[in-house]
Length: 213
Image 1 (cartoon, one colour):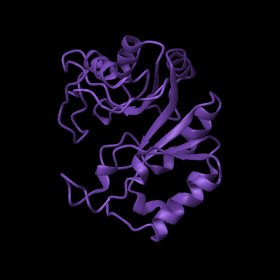
Image 2 (cartoon, helix red, strand yellow):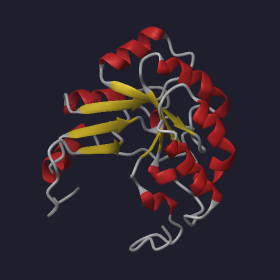
Image 3 (cartoon, helix red, strand yellow):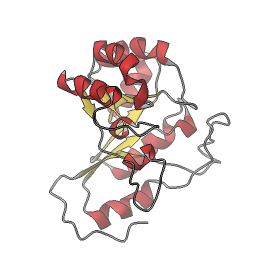
C-alpha cells in the first residue's frame, strides 16, 4: 500500500492502468489463466488514490477473469464518475452486453496477446470492427519484439490502438532496434498511443534499478 508521495500531481491526474481483484467466492478466477488468484479491490485502491492525489483511473480487465467483466465493473461503480474501463469482449459479444458495458463507463477492449489471453490474433480485427462502432479503442498487450510483423495489421484496425507498457519488449531492446522503430512508426500515424506504464515488465535484471530498461 502506498504511503503517499512528495510529488504534487496536477488536477485531474489519472492512473491509466489498474486491475481490480475480488473475493474468489463471488468472482471466481479462470483456472487456465496461468495467474495465481490476487487480492486488491476498489476499496483498497480508493485509499491509494487519496494518498497520491489521483482523481481518475482506468480499470483494465485482468486475464484472471477472462470474459467475465463483473469484478472490474463492480470496482468502477465503487470508484464512481472518475473511473473508466477496458473490458475483455469478443467479436461475438452480444450488442446488448456491449451497450451495457458502455453505459457503465467502459471505453475500450483489451487484447492480451500473450499466454493466458482470452483469444488469438485472428480475432483482433473482427473485434476492432465491433468496438469501433461504439467509439472504443483496443488496448493491445504483446511482446513488443513482435511489432515488426504485427505493425501493419495494428495500423489497419478501424479504431484507436493503445499499446500497453511502453511496448512490453520481453527481450529489452535499444532505441535503434527495428521493433522499437516499428512502435515509433505506429505512433506517427496519430492513431496509436502507448501507455507509460509498468516499464519494469521488460526488465531481465529486475530490482532495484532495472538497469536494462
